[in-house]
Amino acid sequence: MNQLAPAKNKILFANFPGDGHFNPLTGLAVHLVSLGYDVRWYTSKGFAPKLKKLQIPHYPFVKAIDVSDGNFDDVFPGRKKLNSAVSKLKFDIVHAFVLRGPEYYQDLCEVYREFPFDLVIADCAFTGIPFIKDSMGIPVIAVGVFPLTASSVDLPPVGLGMEPSYSIAGKIKQALLRTFVNRVLFKAPNKVMHRMLDEHGIHHKEETVFDLLLSKCDVLLQSGTPSFEYQRRDMPAHVHFAGPMLPHSTASGTRQWFDERLNRFKKVIVVTQGTVEKDINKLLVPTLEAFKDSDTLVVCTTGGSQTAALRQRYSQRNIIIEDFIPFNDIMPYADAYITNGGFGGVLLGIENNLPLVVAGVHEGKNEICARVGYFKLGINLKTEKPLPRQLMAAVEEVINNPIYKENVVALAEEFKQYQPNDLCAAQVASLLKQSTGPVVRAAVVAEKVY
Image (cartoon, rainbow, N blue to C red):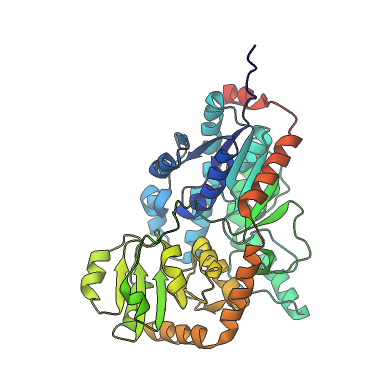
């Protein structure tokens, strides 16, 4: 008599709709599929093509408002009336993140009817986490796709992009700032989150928005390593550094992109501002202005923003402009990396031993850039609109001052000590083993929702 094969553990991935929230999870998802797990993904319809290539079944947003590609102004017209960066940040926290949680919950209950998942793996900004954990009774692993957001008695408040001070005066200042940020600056978003959770019967301790999602997950797999995170005495016990969690790559080992000029110039720099930022005048144009007609080769990736126009404007021999170049193909040739501070790109630059020049402020990039400056991995220009002379001076400094290269190489060596997929898979297996068995509560909840 044929024996039935054991049922596969069902794992659902979920993410806030942004490339920086989706891409770092893809390597782990593909790895878990290779281990025999039944893996599927709940996310924006914009990721359907990528998931199709990965051969991972996709459940698109239905009830949830889709704010993919950072199109907040289009989805929420009221945002355009706000003038200050702080008011826009608070608006985004409430409308793009917090209020989407119940919608994710409704979608997830419907997904569960067809795919009764045993475990959810989500990026740390996915506001469906409290509903999955408390309302559905299903374990959650969160992935830290940007620097650790857990507050600490040793650090300044999260979100301001401040470097820590460990002096007595510095700690007093940081404590005052934490109080101000929590009780004044982010008071409204925090209240909205608390009220929303109260309405759904989800217990909380009136944590900040930044702390609450982390407190609700069973495990936080933090992309990166300890030496790229500030020291603190109160590191949450469920936080585990996983090494740099980078997008799944199908590279065959042979170089897919090459230009003969890479071997003709003594200095090569790579510049990018990711795919979300569309304003080429923030970083790309100032960089090209700074180095045009110089003895430095500039390789500029636009993410598809005005590539043709930039090529026409900058036709110099020492400038290469492409929509996209696999970083693993170009970074081994480079001497420095200019970026607006996307977390994945920064980690990849470090992995390739590149000293950094960073210029980012919004979408949490100020926290990433602050760490680059604090650990002397490069220079933080503390603006998203640097001048050409600032960029030229910063590049010269990070190339000619050996301290930056030495620090980057040391951190890259630490990166090599971690095997992200294996570490994450071990956490998955452990959490599934601890699970009490089939979850039935989610199905009951689904009946109540609908």
